[in-house]
Length: 159
Image (cartoon, rainbow, N blue to C red; front, side, top):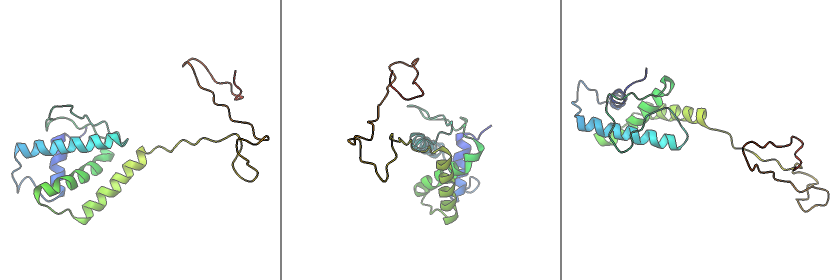
C-alpha cells in the first residue's frame, strides 16, 4: 500500500519545516499542494519517469486518493515536492533537502533512462572507409515491414 496524496503533501511540508502540529494547513492549501504534486508527476511522466501515479484529468484530486507510487520513490517525490512548495510558504529549503532531492531524482532518472539505439552501417567507419559511393562498399539496403506478420530474412537480403 502506498501513501495517499494528502500524506505525501504533509510529509513534503514537514520536510521544509511546516509541521502540522505547529501550523494549521487549510483545505485550500492542501488542494493547491496536491495540484502541484499532480503537475510535478505529470512532468515526470512526460520525461519517462513512470511511477504509476494516477493523474487527475480536469478535476482536482482528493487528499485521500492513493498515490500508487512505489516505496523506493517516496524520497524523490517528497523532497522534490517540498522544494516546489517552499516558496509558497516563504521557506528556504535546507541544503540537505536539496541534496537528497537531487540524488533521489537522479536515481529515478537512472532507473528509467533507456540507452539510445545505435545504427551500424554495413562496414565499420575507420581506415579505408570511403563512404557509400565507393565501388568496394555495398550500399546499405533498408528493409521495411509492410505488415506486422512479415518477417525479415536473417541473411539481410531483400526478398
